Length: 93
Image 1 (cartoon, helix red, strand yellow):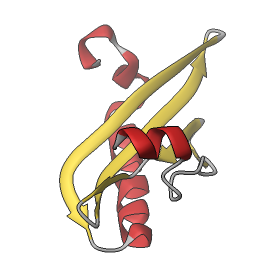
Image 2 (tube, rainbow, N blue to C red):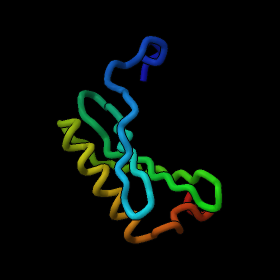
Image 3 (tube, rainbow, N blue to C red):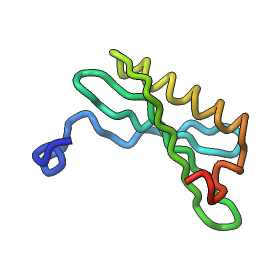
Image 4 (cartoon, rainbow, N blue to C red):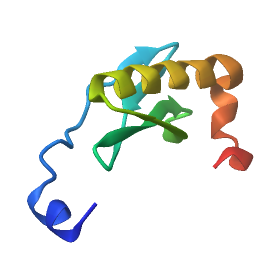
């Protein structure tokens, strides 16, 4: 992101609504790259009173923002299904 975009807002970046899934919140945090969008999502959960966060970033890029958002949510759900709260273990950061 360029300096001017950071200072004056990129226009497209907004806080997405979380998707609740199995006690986790998934936020699609797409990364714009050359007119395309990279698959990226943030997974959050409160564990023992502490807010835990895990970020999923993949090499996949999509032409459509909606498509990238859908795939980001699906990938985050897959990570949750496979690993559960283990994603927050110190070796996964």
